[in-house]
Image (cartoon, rainbow, N blue to C red; front, side):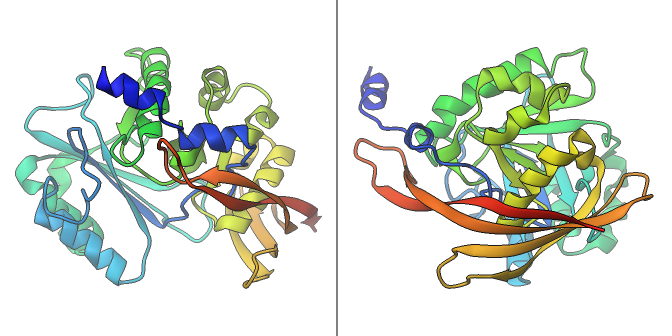
Length: 331
């Protein structure tokens, strides 16, 4: 009763964001690698800082990455009765294997709980020790993993809106008959104002403001890519302004764009006011027969009010909105 009463008086940040027309593009977290670990809910907010429930080895491995100035997104996924193994922990590790890439390189292990910390250290700090874990390695490169944020301890919008989307994906798409897709409830990865939100691996695409009717296209990729435009947060292989440009390129190139190896950079930008940026994205087709590039100008296009946190009286913040004013395919 008290929970319902609280939710009845709650203004969800994602509803405010959507009502005010906030575009989610450019909000994907650009990273070089992912460390994803099975861990039972509820997940405390400081799950990656204190050695509880994660072992000290995991905390030490993450600190090594952060102190070295590299980027990583650490995520917890809830054990699943069909996927998980008692007394063992699943670890998914993805990394950017080259400067030009289409998707992240995947490594999966299922280890005894006691070895979790040492595996994390081997993955992130001591790769020469990885052969010690060969017996636990899983051959799952054919499996696509969709992770839906359900981290209600960070923001109630993630559980309120994330769980129904997770449930639909899990029950209708990741069925026993589909051995190429798994769907997980996962911890916070940024952007709860875009809930329900998910990350699609190994592609590394982020999605937000999701609606049930768009899921079939997102999963099956069997219709017009343009229908996905308002839900796309961006690709984790590019920085913010390049993500904004990449969406426009994808709309022109179609589904084949996902198979192209690509890299992007910001050539120049308004570093003080963040009003504009010039971006170049270089790509090679999947068969490596064609190499080309796009150059784009990204400029601010007004602003909207959004809320960073759900609550009875959330504080509204002004956020700039951007669009591509020039897009040229270079010879």
